[in-house]
Amino acid sequence: MTQPRNIPFGKPLLGQEEIEAVMAVLGGTQLVHGPRAKQFEADFAAFCGGGHATSVASCTAGLHLAYFDLGIGPGDEVIVPAETHVATAHAVEFTGANCVFVDVEAETGNISPDAVAAAITERTRAISVVHYLGLPADMPSIMMLAEKHGLAVIEDCALAIGSYLDGVHCGLIGDVGCFSFYPVKHMTTAEGGMVLSSHRDTISRIERKKAFGLDRTVTERSVPGIYDVTMLGYNYRLNELAAALGVEQVKKLPAFLEARRENTAVLRDALAEIDEVGLLWAGDDRFVSSHYCTAAILDDATAPRRFEIVRGLNAAGVGTSVYYPRPVPHMTYYREKYELPVDAFPNAARISNQSIALPVGPHLGADDMRYVATTLKNVIKETLP
Ligand SMILES: *Cc1c(COP(=O)(O)O)cnc(C)c1O
Image 1 (cartoon, helix red, strand yellow):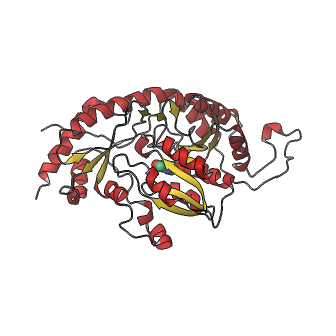
Image 2 (cartoon, helix red, strand yellow):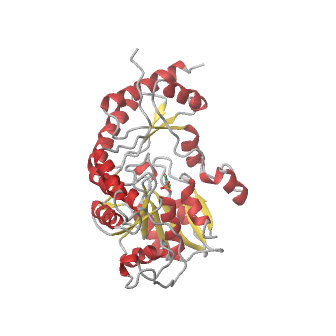
Image 3 (cartoon, rainbow, N blue to C red):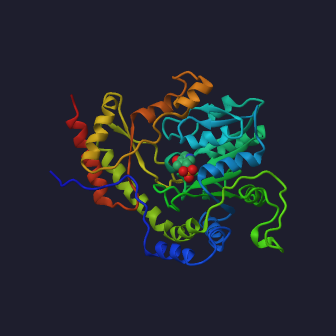
C-alpha cells in the first residue's frame, strides 16, 4: 500500500517574482490604467504568435464584450455547444439573444460541425466554439460554415492557452478569442481575462467598450478628467495588480505547458491499462492541446459508481473535478427557459455524467500521475458491489 499523497486538482504557481511585481504596484500610485496592463497585453499576444489583445476582468467579461461588439440582441441566435461552462452561454444571454444549443462530438467533446450546420437559421448571427479541455475544435469546418452563412465565430479559449491548430494559436482562427486567468486555469491573475483577435479594429473597439465607451484613454487626455462618451460601454478592465501577476505568469507559460504535456502523456499511458476507463481523442499532428486536464470516462457499467469512485480518489489525496457538471441546457435556468428535450445532447450528457476530470497541472510530476492511475484502478475494484 502506497502512502496517500496530496494532489490538488489545480494549484496556482506563484513565486517570488509575482510577489515582487505586486508589491511594486502597491508601492506606486497607479492601480488601474497603468503600464502593466499594456505590457501584459503585448506579452500575451506575443506568446500567441501575433494578433492584438486587450485585458479584461474575466473571460466571461471578454465573451460578453465580443457579443456586445457584434451588436446582437433580442431575436438573434448564437449556436453554442452543450458541453461547456455556463459562462459561454451566459455571455450570449446578457445581450438578449438566444442560445441554440448543439451536441458535441463523442470522441473530443468539441462542438460538432454537422450539428452546427443543422442548427443554422435565418436568425443565426454567430457560432460559439469552445476548445474542450484544450483540444482545438474542428475550426476549418466551422470557418467554412461561418463564411458560407456570413456568421461571426467567437472562440471561448478559457481552457486553450497554448492550443494550436495547424500552427495557429486558438483565438486567432475565428473572429475573437477569450481567455481566462481564473486560479485553476493554465496561468492566473486571481480573476482576469484577455480578448485576442487577428483584427486590430475589433480590439480597438473592445478597448473602448470595456471602459465605459469613453472616446479617449487616460494617456490620450490633454486635460485630465476631460473626455466624451461616444458609445455604451461596461467597466470590465483588468487592474494593475492582476496585470502585474499576468506579466510574470506569461513568462512561465512555456514551462507550465511542457509539464502539462509530459504529465498528460504519462497519465494517458497508465489509464489505457484500465478496462473500465475510456479517453477522449488526443489529436494528431495538426492539433496541439493545452492539456487542461484528462477526462477519465467510465464505461456504462462503472459510471453509476462515479461519485463513490470520486470519494475514494479524494480520500487517497487525489483531487478531481467534473468538466462540466451538466450539459448547459440541463442547468435549471436554461432548462426552464428553453424546455429542450433531455435526450437532445447524448454525447454531452455522457461526458457530464460519466467522466472524472483528473489533474495534470505543472504542480505535479510523473510519480503523481502514476499514483493517480493506480489509485483509480484500485478504487474502481474496491467499489465493485
Ligand atoms: C472557466 C471558464 C470560463 C469562465 O472564465 P472566467 O475567467 O472565470 O470568467 C468560460 N468558459 C470556459 C470554457 C471555462 O472553462
